[in-house]
Image (cartoon, rainbow, N blue to C red):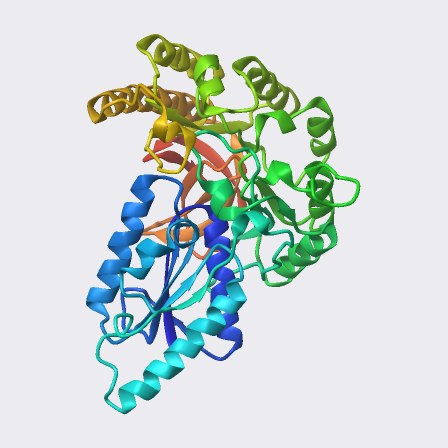
Amino acid sequence: MKFGFYTLGCKTNQFETQAMERFLAERGHEIGSFEGPCDGYIINTCSVTAVADKKNRAVIRRCRRENPEAVIGVCGCYTQHAPEDVRKLGVDVIGGSAKREEFIEKMLEAAQKAAIARSEATRQSPGLSGSPLELLDNALSRREYEVLPAGGLAERTRAMLKIQDGCVNFCSYCIIPYTRGPIRSESLEDAVRQARELEARGYREIVVTGIEIAGWGRDLPGKPPVRQLIEAVCDAVPALRIRLGSLEPRIVTEEFCAALVSKPNLCPQFHLSMQSGCDTVLERMRRKYDTARYLESLELLRRFFPGCAVTTDMIVAFPGETEEEFRQSLEFIRKCAFAGMHIFPYSRRPGTPAADMPGQLGNDVKEERSRAAIAVARQMNRSYRESLVGTLQEVLFEEEEGAFSTGHARNYIRVWAEGKGLHNRIRSVRITGLYQDGLLGEIPGE
């Protein structure tokens, strides 16, 4: 049978989709295009914002409309949070944000029944003729980490390595602790084993990811800090580049930086979660740090990793955010001089404390503040890229675009250089200027 996948959301979701692809392939099934004809379609959902929920529903409806005879399965954070909404959309299998292998078994069971029914000309409206098969649990009661296979099926250069699941921060705007449950950590031994397997399969870079990787180890004996796992992975595959997912600022200490600066294969790019540059807004968000602690983490990273790229996320127009609070945020991000930013207007998420806070702001304010923050972010990004002109950057090439090969430097800036046949190779590139949203360079000797 052939199955197509559609993934919304974070790198953890992408990792879990790749694991489900492997489960199907190992059982002798084919992975097809979501846009092409398949026996079954799997939609792995996100629920980080109300906008994400809207996208989930649109994709599910379109899939059912365009594939009336196929089996459709939906899993992920949206189904975990709102299974009753998914049931109304005529799907055949509903899974949550765990038990991925069991979900695949349910999909195969439904697809086999559908094939038999089609041969008997009795199946007319898949997903509407009966109750869907369901595989849901209470996320908050989870205690065991679900080990999934790392690495996808297609020819890729970069693989994700999920090391933990769950979050217990309960920020006032976030539904994820309710959809993912408490922190569960992969063992250090399993993480190292998977890293070595990825190296053997030809990957050149590993992205260490999870729902909150700073929480790794809190549920393990002795509560080891995540830097121990990062050190072990770096040491296990010294020929591979190791890139870190999003970091909580409090994890970045002098001890953290001193331990990792000795690892030459650790990429000097750090996504340091921020959300707001104003202390009163951070307090309403229930973040566990203030701007002074954030700045301390930022300065530590730049002292130990000179020239590193630090990126972040920012939510604008949070409930009650005043013009003065927004002005403070803009001043703070200018002071931080980020290499890149993701700017999000606040999205009201039913079921979270922030949804009921006074001072909900209108779309016009959200759009105005988004534009202002994006303008500052673009200028900072341009300044960082300009600082790299004339330098040598090690680039892992991933794709070809016309006469150019393109890939990412260790700082995750995209680089274009003339040349062919460079897929999955790392080459030194001399940066000659800015190009599109990245850099243009030339490979010495070519």
